Structures are given as structure tokens and as C-alpha cells.
Image (cartoon, rainbow, N blue to C red):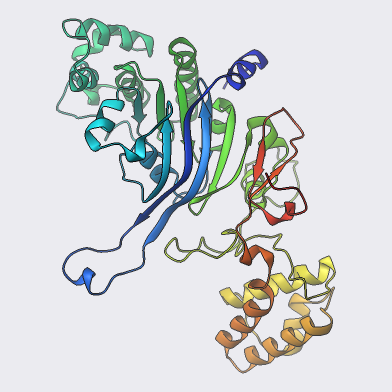
Length: 425
């Protein structure tokens, strides 16, 4: 990927006005429908929960996170393709969340979306020309000159204008995504949501499409919300990066700052999972243990706490770092039942060989080991969680802090209680 964001381009973006501002955006889904659901309501799926950020005109904000974390739901809710449960979305100062559906449709002229799969997002029965013309017809634009504009746009995105009369199946995956680009540009929008637009393409085609997108951004003055799970793609194209986990933003900073100075353990784990193209490289890649919790009943406080390698110890226990690390590992192993409790000596050798907890913490561990040896996993897990996880500040409060960036002048938000000594903004 040859192109990079220059200092001049970054300074120009930083001086731009805010185009899109999202405040406390929430999207919950009801489970099930029909007659019985009114008598036996099921808990809601909290796909997006209290998310806030802004995007400046001409900027690319990258949105990254594991599959299922709510990235696509957030994007569709921002565009009002999904109705928000709560919160506000200000586009050019106007709250889209409060507009009637008809008014939102009119605003779609300025807000477009590029979908992930270039195959399924194009009607196989239509030729490329009419596909790109569709948004113009929907908004009543460019009457009498639509074909000419389509041919110009096809050339802009790197396709032959003579492809106007071809069908989607006659194009490669990369070419089909360029058709999607042309369709998004057809109504001359200001803001485009790109929902993993290159994930279905191989690496060399990815680079070509990304470079085309940057060129189009400069030429047409576009603003992107770019969603991806590929960190290399995000670093290549983004001015700032937002990291999402289980429906909430956990970190937001300028691209270089976030990649070189991550301040949230989840971000660190994501960056640590990037393969290093060096066979001589040593060390264990960042691997997150355990499963992502259910968005139906997410953890209290920090949603990452159930998998966090830096969970903060409760204040009532006076433990060294080594003792707390062993206790934390034991709590999670019991909860996930990842070992066979053959004997007390075996358990202590596996989890506490280098550092045994002291005082009240030792009493809790002793009780839990006794419960395990009695084959009562549930009692052991409950005792450990009630003693070590739930009293932690990580479980009691939702973290929200701003930290001093090491690189650049932009703000660095980190939703982690490790920064609780920092003044909150």
C-alpha cells in the first residue's frame, strides 16, 4: 500500500469543521416477535450502547473491532437505515435521529454507503450503467445527462466508460467494488460509510481500491467512516481510529498515536495479534482468552473486564502484582473450567507456584479449592467472582478518560480505569 497521509493533509483535516457528530447513540434489538412475545418479553440485544464520536469534514475515521462488536450496526444506525433506540446523530448540525423518515430520505443525497460484498450489493439482472444511475433517479438529479455522468464516474473509479452496458458478473471482485464506488458518488455526497469495502478482495486488489478511494476523497472532498477488522487497512487509510468492543467505543485517537501508544488493553491485544513478517521474531503474539460476553447481558462497568489481562485488583486486598496475576488467572480458569482439579497440591502448583496470595485473599482461594475438590465448580466460581471481580472498580463504573497523547496534538480517549488517576474531561 504505497500511499500515506501527508502532514499537510492531516493539518488540513484537523482545521476542518465537524461534519458528523454522534452523541450517546444506542441501538437495542428485541428478540422474537408475534403474539407470545407480548406476554413473555425477552431481554434486548444491546448491539450499540452509548457511543459518542465526531468526524471532521474531509477526514477518514477508521472503526475497528472483532466481528460482532457492533461496527456495522453502528454505521447503519448513523445513516438511519436502522432506527436508533436513543441518542443523537448531528449531520451538518441537524439531528437525523429526530427527522421524519421522508426527510431522512432527502438527506441520503449527502450520505451514501458502500457495502462489504461487491457481489451481493449489485443487482445481477441490471447492467452497470442503470445501477449507477439509480441514486440519481431516486433523488431526481442530472436529468438528461445521467448516462454521460455515469461514464465519467466509471472512468474516475478506474473502469472503462465502455463498461456501461456490462452486467456485474462480467467484472472481477475489485471491479465490482469500483462500480459500488461509482454508485456512491453518483449523487455527489459529502459523507460515505464504507462497511468493510475491501475485505472480500485479495491484498493486491485491496491496495488498488484503497488508493482509488483516497484519490476520490481528495478530488471530491469526501468524508469517510471506514469500517474494517483489518488493522493494516485501517492504518493505511485513516486519519483517526476508533476501537469498538461489545457495542461500545474503548479507544479513539489519531492513527499514529493509537498504533504507537495504545492505552486500552483491548487495543493492545488487537495490535499484538498482527503477524510479524520475520521468522526470527520471538515472543507470544497477543491472544485474548475466553469468549466475548453476550450483548444481551454485557458485563457491568468495563465490558472488557471479563477478558482483560490488566483487571484492577479490589482495594480491600493487599496483593503484589505477581499474586494478583495468579489469582486473576485462577478465577478465569475456574469460570471457564479449563483444568482438571486432581489435588490441592496440583492446583497450587499450576496456579500459585511462584506467588501465593496472603491474608483474606488466601482464605477465598482456600475455600474455592475445597469447593473444586468437592466437584462444586459453581460454588467455587461464584465465590471467586464475588470476591475478586465484582468488587473491582472495573466492574463498578463505566470508564471514560482522556490521556495525554505522545504523538500529534489530537485528543486521546481511553475507556480504561488504568487511567483513573488522570483528570476526566
